[in-house]
Amino acid sequence: MGVSVATDRCIGAAMCAMTAPEVFTQDDDGVGQLLPGGSERAGDPLVEEAARACPVQAIILHG
Image (cartoon, rainbow, N blue to C red; front, side, top):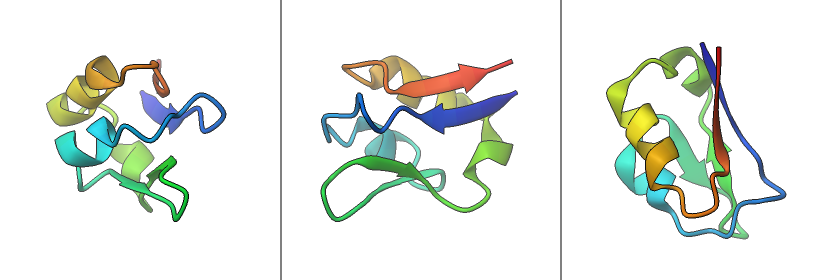
């Protein structure tokens, strides 16, 4: 399983960074970004919660 951020869809709500701060951050424009190694934590329940919490479904779980 993997995880990615659809940066073109992100509106900067920060739900991902607040829900799973070990996996997600925001860039200077407020767009969600994966932290280094973040894709390796795709099975983490907090990552799954972040995907559910995203108001525009910009967090994508693969696999």
